[in-house]
Image 1 (cartoon, chains in turn blue, green):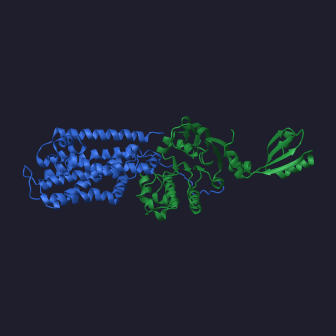
Image 2: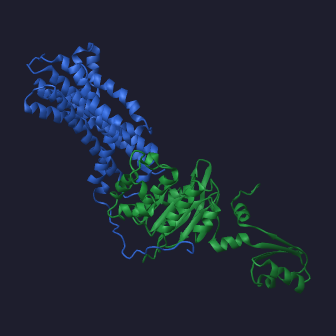
Length: 266
Length: 299
């Protein structure tokens, strides 16, 4: 090494132990969130657009009531909260496609980070953004005069948020399926169609009968029904729960299989 | 470095893609602390070998040991780090965020600020990666590789696509960082880089090692001259014993001698023997590189 001068000599062997939790930690989550919140496109579609939708489509129905006397505006607000959360979680999950296309996942394979910790970070980021989306939508609703009992805010919000886990899995599934940088341009329109079938833009009941039957088997339907149940007083329907669990399994297992294929050696 | 294991042990490594054999029974042993250049033309199998070395690709046959363990173990414990040719960075993070995020993937790393400083990118820590030049992105990859303070650093054509200034800055950064004991393996197709930065050069062609020696040996192999003379009944052993002589070959009445001191040999031949028709031809490093790494036609 005649041309290379040794500037430092290591005296202590570095701590070579494996990272705790496979490398999953709050520090990474913080950077991931900062990153997501810097993305104008994500902000527009998850935090701003659903709120604007409420002001355009929900507010004009002010004063109208559901069968049980609760305001229609609350029905619209909760539906749009589900929509905001599902777009939020899908976009974070789908970002995996971008990272694969950029070769970041290959870079990660040269670090001790466990692939499962990477996915856990994505899920945690997705669910945090999903929660934020629900809260923002509810704040817009509350500011615009929506008044419902506290338990409705809480349970509907919780259902919208937890239900969006299905779409975090959906996002990961698509993210591992297509290696494209602009995956959200493919997913965005799909989400809009699914949201329509799930009764998030208009009640499913106004759709033609055949479509109503089809709608019950689409992925957004279950989440929508469950999130509105505290408001409508319909109770927790078996069909709704079954729908949500089934789709969560389909997307979760699908994502897991693709994930294993992705991390396998060539 | 108290480890008694070789830094790298490749044994009979083979990898094919369809009909193409990218790496063909390659074996290599690298001692801790060596700085090895993996030199060869494009398509020689350098990147495939490095992918297998790092555990990114699975060999069809053969084994890889890094510091006595598997590549996966070495990666998981931060003993090996790499700078790969392309990709691998998130465009929407800043330089500083990228290093900070990666630091969380290890139990313990060098401080982020120190790593940025050593890679020469402390001044652009706040810049978004997508707006960094190719050279800056490459130094960021280098910074990421420095984080775990690895025992083995692998670089795959680290300066490809950089301009002269970028290449110089990159090697300066690597040089600044060099510390006694760290093993470095870098692939390159630039002769001058291998010459300037390696202790040892491994020449590869078509997935095989065609020459392996210290930089001085390879240069000697390349820079030596060939002396040819007509000398019936040449005393091969006597010629081989002369100073500077590397190889002696007798072909009928002709003798071909490869030597580092062609003057002394020519003087000897002309004054002490009956040699005539003495021809001296030189080969430079470039010639040797081409001769050793170019596919033989009709082979």
